[in-house]
Image (tube, rainbow, N blue to C red):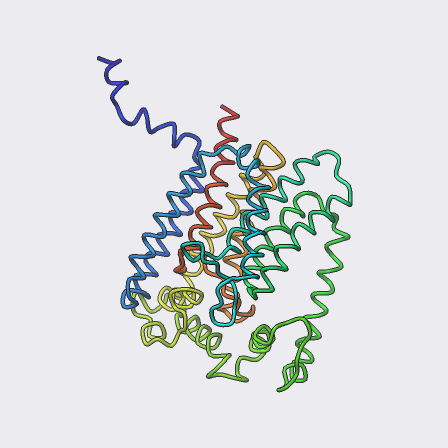
Amino acid sequence: MAHQFGKTHPWRRITPWFRGFDGPLAFAVFLLACAGLVTMYSVGYDHGSRFEDHGRNMLLAGTIMFVVAQIPPQRLMALALPLYLLGVALLIAVAVFGITKKGAQRWLNVGVTIQPSEILKIAVPLMLAWWFQKREGQLRPLDFVVALLLLALPIALIIKQPDLGTGLLVLAAGMSVIFFAGLSWKWIVPPLLLGVVGIGLLVGFEPQLCADGMRWPVLHDYQQQRICTLLDPSRDPLGKGFHIIQGMIAIGSGGFWGKGFMQGTQTHLEFIPERTTDFIFASFSEEFGLVGNMLLIAGFLFLILRGLAIALQAPTLFSRLLAGSITLIFFTYAFVNMGMVSGILPVVGVPLPFVSYGGTAMVTLGLALGILMSIAKSKRLVQS
């Protein structure tokens, strides 16, 4: 009878698929996903099928996470070079015969319309982690130079589209791998100091630099306008500055406790542009206030700390570098989105993880979580 029960009980067959899953990481993602669904219902119930689509995107991301979590890190390492080369080839194809929308050439039609730059958010850290794993124990300065070149190629192609937001995310993901691999602080501090000095000069000379007719080298006109709008949104309150001003009004009007679920006036009177995508944090802040913001930030902090813990405990250099980089991708997403909505960073079109609407971004997040789960799972199975 016991033999027959063990043979037919379905849980015995399913259990190995879940063995080694990281419970705290899954719990953090579940809480953030719930916050995303609640917020999307409020801001998107009268916005077509956004809420239903958001739920389907989450289910798709969860499925991808589950499938990728079953792939051992060793096999992920074998995919690093092919995935990187595929991503770069697709970016070149976009530059040659890509689809242009709203002045940006970012998409490619391969039967369905795809945005190849999204692939590089995962392919670049995979490639760089593979590169440093191959040179473990014998790293030279030249190896870091090669890593920087591997990072610079896709970023140059992405910025050319132009897509500054995705370029910054890929840059952050790649630089985190290089930093965790042991890049010396003497190569990090000088650029940071130059950046701080440059920002100070930019703020000081803002009236002259942002005067009508002034053109900055390197940057596109829209990128220049975003920086000038950040420095002084009131210069064009009904045009370029409208997004930032309305976002700050919504955040401030939420107060300590918020106006309540589905009670946000700025949101439902449609003063907040892109309220289901890039500026959903403003809607969340208006309805749930400072308390809701603190809880949401705590959720992201828990996710990030858990990801870093997985990175520290990973059994190989490749796994450590990849887990650390992917964790900082989540940090960059959340920090940049909240910063741009709050008016402390330029508007660059970066979604808030698990909260903002967007199928491509959700799939990327699901893939990233699957890799983290795979690394955590491999560590637990090795220990057992």
